[in-house]
Length: 342
Ligand code: SF4
Image (spheres, rainbow, N blue to C red):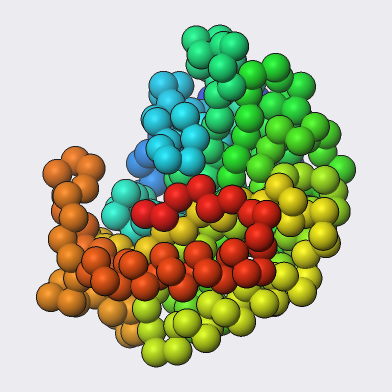
């Protein structure tokens, strides 16, 4: 069982200390005897302990940086929401295929932004722009926000903030089961709480440092019982020997555990495994023993954002994934909605 994250090392920007969240967290970390260092910018953490890249990478993944989010222009977040809301960047998990490998290859430490009210104010402006249409905000585009929230409670505040809002909705996804502090948040049904799930083989070989499927399902049950709209992202869908059986078992376990009321308003998002050439290089550097199959010749090349092509499964394989997983969802969760396959 993965324990709730506790940083080994903490950095703080001096100006962050003007915000109550940083003061509170630094007080907490001092009591826990965690080393605290100052940094002029959360974007430039130097001198991380470690003799080589491999060690420094691992240290970074257990380092928490408290900073101020200066850019309050939100990125778009298609297809799951209108905007990405930036509460944190980075993650303590060690998923080999993680998309953060490339987007923040040189800065794998975890950054938590303490100017939360300013982030809410920016969200308010985006909502006003689109009103009376609803605006959905995705809080897990650049981190697994649930994984650090037992420390910061930023997500809990956001859930309650959007619970009170007229036009805003919140979404996020997690591979962590540490959700107890979120169970009494006044979400008012405006937050969709999603868990990232996968079959046992994939979690075992490619997702070290995250909660196991059993724990994620237990957490999903708690979240459903707390009345949150629930969803699952099956990602990355990865073809390995026995994948059809593996995914069948995963859906069977979900169906056996979830309370009936949770299955009435349930969403699934399906994302096939993909990689880019830069990601492959970073993965092989950080996880040299990985069993992850990254053979371009077996894949189909697809035009990607910023001109970087990605390698996805061949058309017939994609059809097989859609038929197989779509079939399981229809069988075990006939009322659920499949939001997209990509
Ligand atoms: Fe990346 Fe999510 Fe794994 Fe964290 S839990 S390493 S964000 S895939």
